[in-house]
Length: 240
Ligand SMILES: [Fe+2]
Image (cartoon, helix red, strand yellow):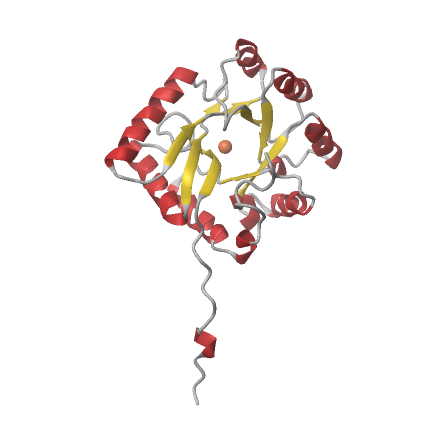
């Protein structure tokens, strides 16, 4: 007799109410979406994956993407209008991913930062080597009353466990990338991200979405059993 039981595997419910804290979705202002059409396509696909809240975080990196606050906000307003025109039920927020350099130091002194949620500032640093300015700036961010959120700590392979411990002690939160969980940035980064999760060091999970080609991999992480077992709402891992 043919058994039908093997076809009756429980179907995992689709992910819902996902929150993305890191995405390059604003068209033409950094290395993310190239056009409004591409931006809307990615936002629509994220909605279909279960996202209800996305924060657009374009790079603010003086040497490559010297984006000004007012230009980022204006671009986000244009995307918001297009989201409404296309009836996509998603909330778009706007912040930035700030590269820690002297220009950021000036923005911090002016107090003109675009923040994630209430007072959180998404920051990144060199992928290649440690900079002496980083510790000072992380400390200054907290001294100014902001909460620094380090984007993808797993990708800075030169950071030691002591560096992680020190940044966390300054009050920094960590945001890991979904794509790191699938080895998108290499095996070493993959090993690190699981170690960070195992040690409960991460607070947020972001897509760091840059282009449509990454959507399928992000979808496969979201549909994985591992993702469904992450604590709380799966994209905000611990109390903020
Ligand atoms: Fe990013």
